[in-house]
Length: 93
Image (cartoon, one colour):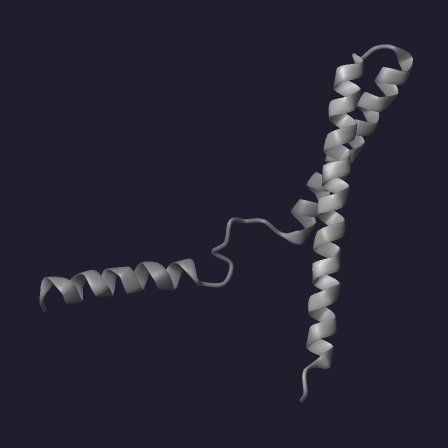
């Protein structure tokens, strides 16, 4: 076995384990949804503190901006999932 074949076999083994089911980054829908919910709850607490005068207006603006970005991201992902589902439904069987 020459050196190139050895490298090819090693690269194939690495690629196979990288593409194996369940070998992803550990992100699941439940963890992402939980993180989204935690983010919104934290920002809501910041907004309440700002209304009570316990937080600076800058923190409130940062929290609102981050919340808006999170909601827009979730809406975009939802739209892409719905679009993909509709595309699957249009496929001929």
